[in-house]
Length: 359
Image 1 (cartoon, rainbow, N blue to C red):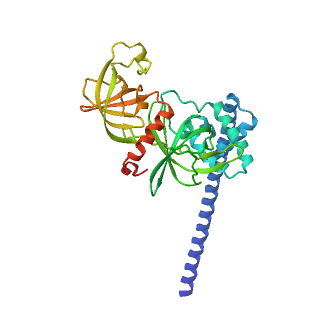
Image 2 (image 1 turned 30 degrees about the horizontal axis):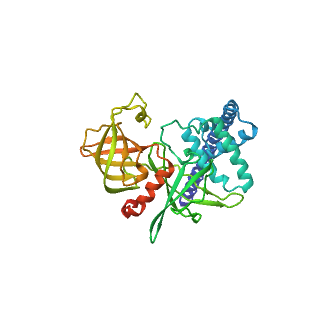
Image 3 (image 1 turned 45 degrees about the vertical axis):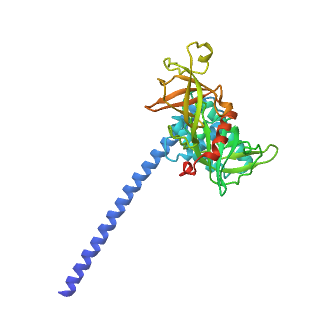
């Protein structure tokens, strides 16, 4: 009986193993077929997506080589639908930033050729347009000639150096060598983390983290500065700002906003109802200044500075952007890069080290 029971138990185990094998075999076949269908569907969608991407590219006037570059960019998107590359500026910038990492591993000449094609593609699809007055979102929206300032922390204190954008593409920012206040060129190490600043034509202070990843000396000396897709702007919280105790005069013009058009310095040429008043200035920054509120000044009124301790500010026009119970905030209009540099170099030794915490 024990032998029969053992045989019957062995038969049950054998049947269990057999049916288990059949189950896993059927499950594997079904799972494999499902994966095959998904793969075929994905490949079909990608293939049709590349066809759609090519059609859109041809409508934009891209040539064969530019379409090849566009398709290589689309491969960075992995399983995403290729035409999404041209759906918005945000997606295009994100894919371009990822594609740049691959391009940097190419031989130098091949990278330059690919970069020229990518720049041409971007120009034709029209993603570089930035409407006037719209704040920039990335460093790719800088302008040729834009002034850049780098803040370098040293044992002797923080120093400010200035440069200018001479070239701009999706690979890097081309900038002149940085110079100090005395006008001498300074040498910055490659791959060193830097904090750079710039001001928009509207007078807003922006900063971003970056590094210099190539120094070109021939035939022209310039720097390749890394892009950053994150710009920092603090409304009313400028880093370059110092407290002062100035007495000065301002020529006050009660201007107003006309629809979407803000008052400009040109209104002083035709104005006849201006008034000169003495005010107290308690704060100055690279963007403007703060005045103690002593008269009924309102937002969008214009002021022209007179008898300032900084002579180069005399005659400069500012617009009132905020008014509180005790303070009027002025933002300078039409400052030249040289004017702003004089303000920054004046403030630099007077700024508290705490202002640079977290930068």
